Amino acid sequence: MLEQILTIGFFTAFFSAAVRMAMPLIYAGLGEVFAEKAGILNIGMEGVMLSGAFCSFAGALFSGSLWIGMLAGILGGIAVSMIHAFLSIHLAQNQSVIGLALNTFVLGLTSFFSRIVKEGESYQQLSTFSTIRIPVLSDIPLIGDALFNQDIFTYILYIIVIVMTVFYAKTAKGLAFEAIGEHPRAADAAGIPVHKYQYIAMIVNGILGGIGGAHLVLVQLGVFSENMTSGRGYIALAAVILGRYTPIGTVGAALIFGGANALQIRLQAVGVPLPAQALAMLPYIITLIALLGSIGRSNEPESLSKPYIRGSR
Image (cartoon, rainbow, N blue to C red; front, side):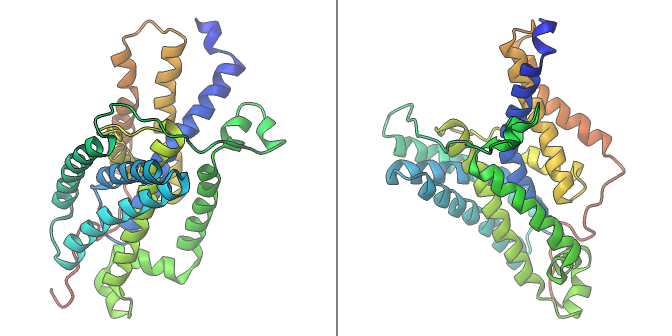
């Protein structure tokens, strides 16, 4: 068994699966970074992803187009994020409670409508986005297939990570978003429209979270099932914390979690003599261990999850 694991083929397949499994987490995590940098804690990312997954499935099923399905998934993610934004920004309600309530609401809503959409059929398979192989680069040993033989949204993600990193490090707008998350009153006094920027941040949060959910349906599985996100929204939140609220750090943390998920699948495939349930717990155990290891090193924005009411003291 050990000789099956310690091979180039095993590690090549493992790295490729790790990147593929991490994609929804990275998209959701980057969306959460954008929200939290502006002071909004969206625990409802699980609901955002689930809405994106269901809407992308319904959109692709009825239109016959994967791109329309992806657009529907993005709109589904935005819808949930904007509900959160209205309640947390305009009505200044508790953001943790809002997020948990939205997760429960979206789970029930998508479960109900999925049964209607499927019209009694228990299984409906969609086609998925195909992989795009980049010549030469995809032939690099171990990592070539993982990084350069993926779907189009993986390549788009590379650009998003670079743009977000530069945006926060080098632009005045990026610094303005960070200022809102740290000291919204000072940002307001400096002429930055705090609530406007927070709404923008939540739109981006919905777009990226919706893509993360849609990726599960339109790239990985081709089907929608009830509660198919299975806690990925919460793992994305953990990735943001472990990644210290930075785009690059969040990507690295999400790859760890994606790698854990890929590892348990690969170990089952080679017949490791452990119960399948124990191996399925591996991603969540690693999430907990990683979070415990990050205690005391958090860089969370000073005003994260604290509603800003203009004129209040």
